[in-house]
Image (cartoon, rainbow, N blue to C red; front, side, top):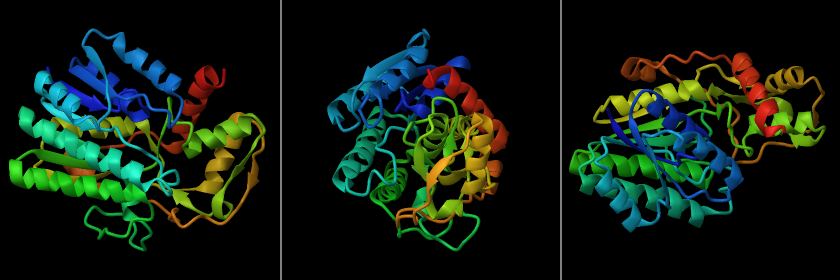
Length: 318
């Protein structure tokens, strides 16, 4: 059985990853600081799904606390660290560069250093499709040039990828960076577009749809992302950067229509121009993930949003 440290374990993706690992028989330690970027109560509910399992240990701690992180790694004897904890959100990062730098860069270095000192051989890092910025190269490939992020959040993720390469080169710590594309599904964060659109339509409230919906996003269902994360944890590959998306961008106006059909109500929208932080399209080339991880996304957006809507009605919509 594998021993895994999952940071951000009480979050949206982290709780799904941790539960999947537990269900297959792994020992999982979860680290989360339950911050208030969105409702800590939601994270507590996610964590409760994990703490009910006998092979799960919860550490309520902050990745910026280097001594605590070092102690957790030293005592855990982990086979792999899956680092999902971060300050997330492109738009929220715009006026908060110091905070994002502190959590996403210093926190990542703390974990890399702790893993190195503890002898943990493998590190999986959650990166983002937003590292690609605004580009005419479609679909986005892992060997596309970076260096022109549109906000602090992706800038910090580029830094994390680069620091991972340094630790691989210097200390032979295998490192896989996974660039997530527009993840959605049950337990989804309330600051993300699928939740905002669904919640707004359900309650008859107005929301913003940039550029009249003439933007495209590569929506990827959380179960498919989890499959890619677990595969990366199981396959040390040296140093690799790998896209995890669906490879089928969806026009945002069509996405809103889909939600209208699910909810059975019309959307109330304003349609302002997109801010500079928002690229017109995200579009993953997933051929590398297929080749190296056996990644094969199964859930089209129509099915995935139906599952999200079922969860929303049962849980978040109470």
